[in-house]
Image (cartoon, rainbow, N blue to C red; front, side, top):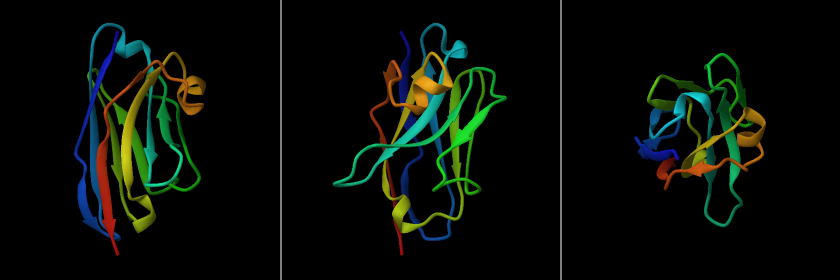
Length: 121
């Protein structure tokens, strides 16, 4: 069992930066791939970024490539968001899964409750 709790959301102006954290507890966190998803009002949840268990391999949605960076340590996974745009406004969710593909496909075993990110124009 893995429990995930996101933090770091808030309000930021377009062009600004924000960092999200996802604290993980429970056994076997270090063996799980991790990722971030987001869901804007009236839209489906979409993949943002994923990282494998060792932190070596990362993958990003085209919409955030070059602006967002995912990383992890022994207890948390992070999402550094730079050059934010109003279209990045969404609730951001942390996810954990057996592998990167599982996370990217949105079929991860564990999910956090989400944290709101609002980017003003």
